[in-house]
Length: 480
Ligand code: SF4
Image: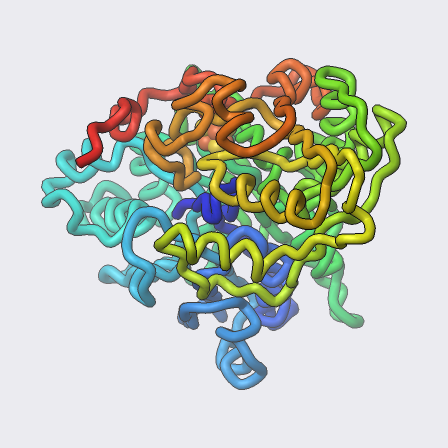
């Protein structure tokens, strides 16, 4: 299941977590794991556990802490479990599309959590003889194909069913799955979304440890698991009483690492480690690099909270211009503020951000943000800063211009809603109301991440997609 851009910026991704710990009751650990991944999806949350014989699932709309309490966690008894936090793009925002998806077909019960987006849904539906759109989401479609694989007698085991279905999937999928007795983690052959493996120590005096998989390493930290390694693109890790075992279901020629570069720019937690690099430090270096590439004379550097702040600190370090806090964020903003009209959008930004007038008045500001998508929020922020008395506002963006839609799990506008796809730099500067505008270059971004020998997807910046993609949303549409 996919991620969404909202309020004009790069926003959430889904989060997956799984644990196999024979001597533990894992539901509280799965709760902690998905709570650590809450930033990747706030729409729904769910946990599935197995005691070796029966799978039990609890899921609902809302934040992890509003879906789960001591009462329903105590009903989730088992030593094996998966959890999911969701932000939808395909399918409606309803209980039915909350995850984990659970299927029980004959002998085979299993649960599935998905982070990503399939790019060959139409082909898979037609191969499986389904009417288009019958499945409520691409995650549901994966579950259906696995179910059919069981029923069609293609396989007599969960692992074999997975090995027959997975090679048919294209696009982005970091999956956690479980049947009654084993935990499985899968990363697509491009590794668009992150997935890591950890080891959890024995509980008090029981002498038996366990294994954990998670979208990001902070979800390992929270359950006191030791980071072991990232799961490789194209790898399936099967965990049972014998420990983890790697299986390679995809043809070798499809394995080609393309981690989403926006995991480093925005999605992942600052304390996550991806490709062996700490995300916060990479964001700081993006700001330093930006100061080198697009310098400006100014009095103060501020970041757009929260995501622009590490790069703003980096810009200050790289330029020698002091860093300060110029905008205060209301941390209790939920997702309920729907902003269909321009007036609503202005109000939404005012609810969320308020300028510190004494800091700003009369100063020449560098304002650092991580991305500009539609430009709506950025425009409002610049207006707020000018109203608060800023003498100049120079916008610096710690990623390159976003010009192409994403088919790998980010809910992007169609091309004609992407500001940088419609306008050149001069027109964007005028539209946003900035005194100047500068973006980090792609080589600069990759240099700041500093993970040589690795592979990244940057298709939304370059239009160079690592896999075949549908043409939907690529053209500039005629608006009526
Ligand atoms: S197209 Fe952009 S947002 Fe989508 S996976 Fe690639 S880098 Fe990430």
